[in-house]
Length: 200
Image (tube, rainbow, N blue to C red):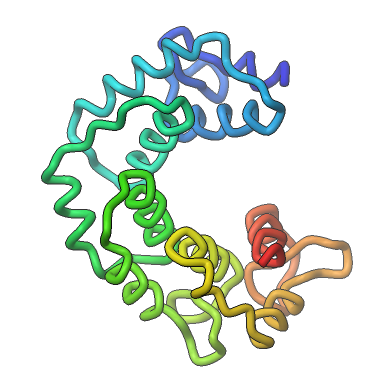
């Protein structure tokens, strides 16, 4: 907790060391504090900083994801340009399933009704083995799919034998998960993904 609090920046966000703050580090800093039922003592500065960023042009969806989630954490009003909402509603193809996940979370927070297109975009990345990924299935892409479908409609999640078996094949003897079966070493991101998927 001391480490997280010392990452706070005087402009309102969180920084890795002494550099300028960014929304990604701020998001993970706040999520860490949230797990311990704690809040930053510069909450008002963070809110003003994020609201200021919201007034500028929205570029990558990942940055938008972090900003909107931060405002949502604090139950603040989220102002999004109508042109950006129109882009979200028109989207039906995604570069990868991580992008589809960001799109789904943002649309859910903004109460947009565009999930039929999202489902079609997600299922287009389902492979013959019934898992998900670009070109070949991997545990992280499958995790993003499961989380997206859970937000849209949890009944859409079909944890069939193939998915369960795939997840087990990514589990190593030392306890971590790998991105795909039969590789080494395990990594934190697929381990997080594997544990989250097993919740379903």
